[in-house]
Image (cartoon, one colour):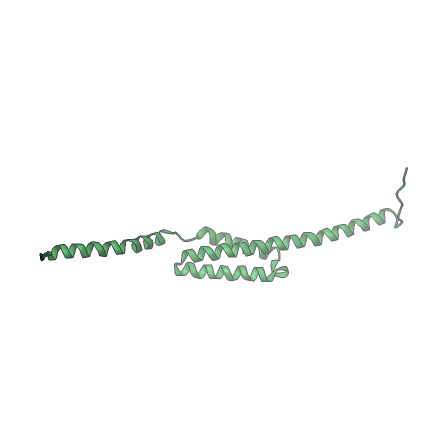
Length: 140
């Protein structure tokens, strides 16, 4: 049986190489995570969408959607302050989606209401023009 003598320098190098190798993946992941910038555009888009939804009166017609948009926007702002940019982006995108949903739903509802009022006004105008009498269609 032969006894191998291992140099202490070689053992140290082997240990150091293994240690560096073990830390390289987490280091790369941390650097990649830090390289992601703050979602400034997403935050701006979300704020504008919430403001537009408020402007058309979504709080009267779809308050639950607007409330959810505001909650997500607050969460995004909190995550921005904490430096958790991926969560801030996720919440800002969700806030924008809820706000746009509230905005479009409110516009559709208002259009329907105005359409019904417009149809009623047209009928009243036609009745006034015909002196209130209904003229049957003539068939040739």
